[in-house]
Image 1 (cartoon, rainbow, N blue to C red):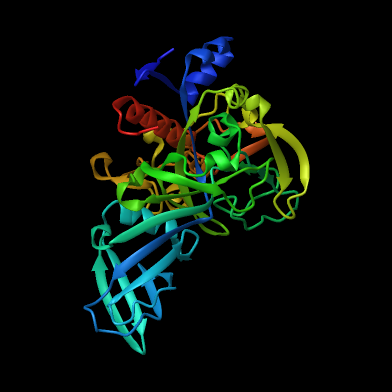
Image 2 (cartoon, rainbow, N blue to C red):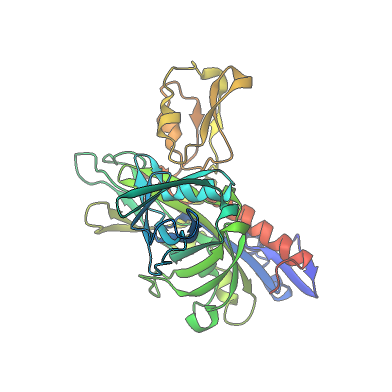
Amino acid sequence: MDESKTEDKVVVTVEELKKMVRNNEEDKIDEIDIVTTATSGIMSGTMVILHIPVAEPGTFRKGERIYLNGIKGYIGPCPNEYLGSVDVVVYGTSYVEDYGGGFLFKDLVAGKEIDILLESEGRRYERTITLDDIPTAKMIGTRMAFKNYLAFTNLGEKPVKTIFHRRKMKKGEASFSGCGELNPLQNMCCDERSLIGKKVLLNGAEGVILGFGTRSSPEKGNIMISADMRNMDPYYLGGFITSGGVEVFNTVAVPVEVDEKNKEFLKTLDEDIPLPLVNVVGRSIIDVGNYAQVWKDADLRPNINIYRCRNCDVCIPMEMCPTKAIKRMSHLGNRPLPTEDCFGCGVCTGACPYGIYSMKLNSILEVPITCRQSDRERAIKLCRELKRRIERGEFKL
C-alpha cells in the first residue's frame, strides 16, 4: 500500500483502496483516514458567472446582449447602470457551430484572449480580454459527479442524433457515462446536511459543495458545486462535441473520511454498481449490466500506429474528435496525433480508414461501446493531485 501521513492522517487514493479490496486486504481500511475520490465526464449543468468590464464608465447605460467568442451570454440581473460593465451568465451547453461553452471556459482558464461583443441601444461595444481582466469568474455546476448514470444504445434501424455520441448513434452500438467505483458519491453516505460546505477540487481549483444538485435522487445522486475559475487547470475541463450539440466536461475530486458511515460504501467495486442499458429514444430499460463490464481492463487512451498514417488532406479522426484533441505535428511530417486534450472517448478508433488508432473499449451486455463520455485517466490524476495537496498541507480538511 502506498500511503502517506499528514497531520497524523493516512491518505490513499480511491484507486489504491480498490486494489486493497480486490486483494482481500479490506481490513486495512481501518488504518486509513482519508480516501481521495474523483470523477470526470460530461456535466451539462455547468455555467459560469462573470463580471466583465466592457468599456469606460458612462459609455453605455446598460448591456442588452453580449457574446463571448460568438457564444451568447445572459446579462443580469444587476443592471450596473452607466458602469461600463455587465454581470453575465454563460452556459456550458451554449454553442456556435462546433465551439461550445466548454471550449470557451477552457480557453479562459488557459489564459487565452476572448473577444467580447456587447450591444446596447443600437450600438456595439467590442473588447478583447483574458481571465485576468475579469474581476469575478465563478463556475457553478447544478448537477455534477452523478453517482452513476446510464449506457445508451439504438434499437431502431436509422442512426439517431444524440448528445450521447459524437456522431449519430447506429443500431448495435452503445455509449455510456460514469467513472464507476472511483466516483465520490459511490464512496460515501450521501447525506445533504453533511455535504453542504464540504471542500472539493473542481477542475483543480478548491471549491465547495452547495448541496444536492438538480435531478438528484438516492439512486442517482449528484451534487452542486462552485469554484473560482482563476485557480483551475485547463487540462481538467473542456468542450465535447456530439451529434446533438456541444457539451461540457469537468473533473471533480472529493476527500472522503473513513468512518462508520462511509466504510461500507468505500468497499464498493465496479461489479457491484449497476449500469442500466437503455434505448436512446425514450430511455426504456433494456437490461442492467455493471461498470466492470465497461471498465475492467479497458484502455484509457488509444494505441497509435503512426506508420499507418497516409497524412490525408482531411484527417477524419481529427475532424471527428469530440474534444478537438488531435493536432498535426510538424516534427512528424504534419501527421495528426492526440494531445493531452484527449478524453479517451474511443471515437477515433472507428474513424480512421487505415486503422491508426486502436483501443479496447469493452461492451455492455454484449453491445460494443463506441463512445465513452467519462474519463478515468483525468479522474485518477485529480485523485492523486488531491492526495498530494493534503499531504503538503495545501488542502485543509
